Amino acid sequence: MVSELRKAIKKAEKLPEDKQKALADIILDEIQWDISFQNSQDKLMFLAEEALVEYKAKKTKPLKLD
Image (cartoon, rainbow, N blue to C red; front, side, top):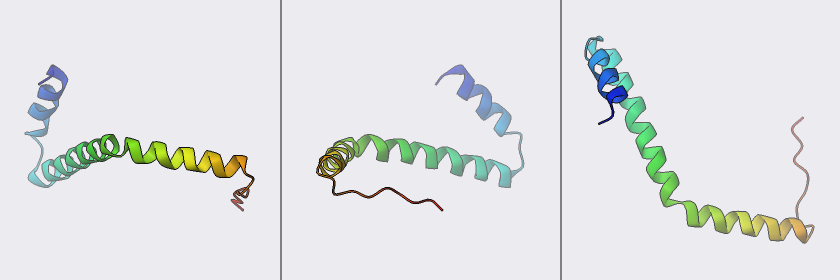
């Protein structure tokens, strides 16, 4: 474990239980996001290539954000 994480956990242990739970939820969500993102790289690449093909074939429309 890196020293920064060890330091953060030591400080977090002094927080009230509800704050510790909230912090734990944030950390676990971040870890899950990283795992999901890593596991989806092939799919993201496929979708990006597909979007580029559609763009070059003029099958796309500008996004209106109004």
